[in-house]
Every structure is written in structure tokens, then in C-alpha cells.
Image (cartoon, rainbow, N blue to C red; front, side):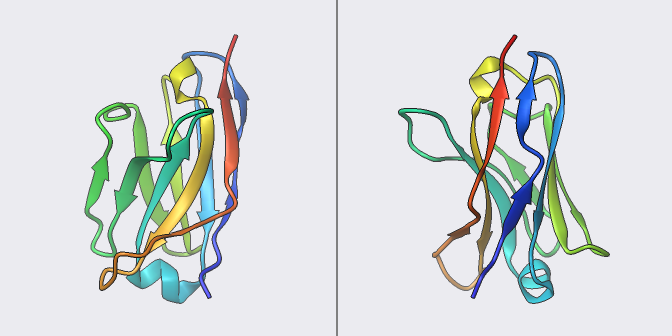
Length: 117
């Protein structure tokens, strides 16, 4: 069973920063492709960023240069540091985990991020 527990969402003004964290079991953390997706009201869930077990990262064009995904190997957590936030970043953010040998992706319960003045 894949369990992902997110934390760190909230309300922030445009230009501000937030840090999201996702905790996973050691077996998931060390082997799966971990990442973040988001879903804004009325829109489909979209890719934000991923990091592989080997440390390769990838980002959506819309967040490149503003968001940073990283892993803390001592805590089995993956974080998303979000800087220079924009109102269009407002969404529910979901932590994700995908085994590299399969196409199915698991998601956490989501955490709300609201960027508004």
C-alpha cells in the first residue's frame, strides 16, 4: 500500500513563497519516481515536478526556475519549494509516487495552495 502524507499548504501573497512536504515509507521513497501534481478549480490535474531515485528532476514549463523539488533521505520526505508564487499557481497540490516499472501513479490526499492578495 502506498501512503503519501502532504503538509505545508496555505495562503500566500503574490511573490511569496511556500514549502510543501510529502512523507512516504522508505521502500517507496527509495525506489519510486516521486513528484507533485496540481489541480486548479475547473481544470484537469497537471504535472508540476518529479524526481527520480537517481536524483534526476523535471519541471513543468510554467514553474521552471521558480519551484524546486528535493528529497531528504534522512526523513523520507520529498519537498517542493515554491518561490515567486503567482495567482495562477492556486490549486490543490498532490504528492505523487510511481513505480519506475509501471505506469500507475499514486497520489496523496492533497494540500491547498492559495495565492492571493
